[in-house]
Length: 206
Image 1 (cartoon, rainbow, N blue to C red):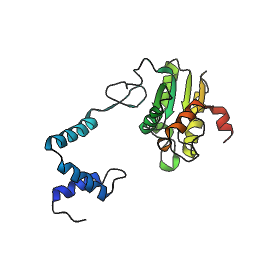
Image 2: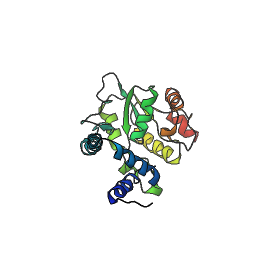
Image 3: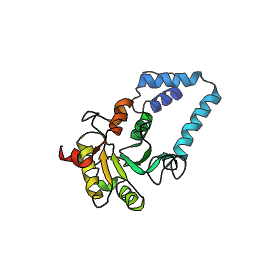
Image 4: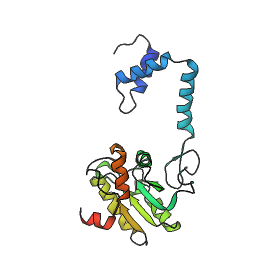
């Protein structure tokens, strides 16, 4: 792909670094911005820069937040005694889109995967246990991707939760084994949350 402007080429190369964006798509996006009013493009740039510099992670659940505590944890209408454990922020967004869940979350920041060099100490597991110890937690719901790594993570955390008198469940497997939550349709994901299963029966059947 040849460019008559190094400025245009640099912009295309930066957009192409984004996941799922190839050179052709990047060029289309850059040319679109080139047609826009300078003030609109400046506002677009400011929004991205402000997001990166000012966004925070909730000190309680590790979801993205504008302040120290996210809007979900600070919402008095949410069921604060129910914690849905997810792998990443995309999964929070996917579950929130179902409008079928009214509790809180805990973002692990990944899943246990020895082959990828990811162990329990690199995840937000101890902070989850600390929440259970300090808060009046009634139920933990595991909403991890249905694959070997997800199951390993569930098994590990479930063992650490055994000393505590709380209900531990996992979403029903309306989602195919090996699938990913963010790609599940909202109805399937919503029903999986409503029809969640005790972790003990799920783990014993694996």
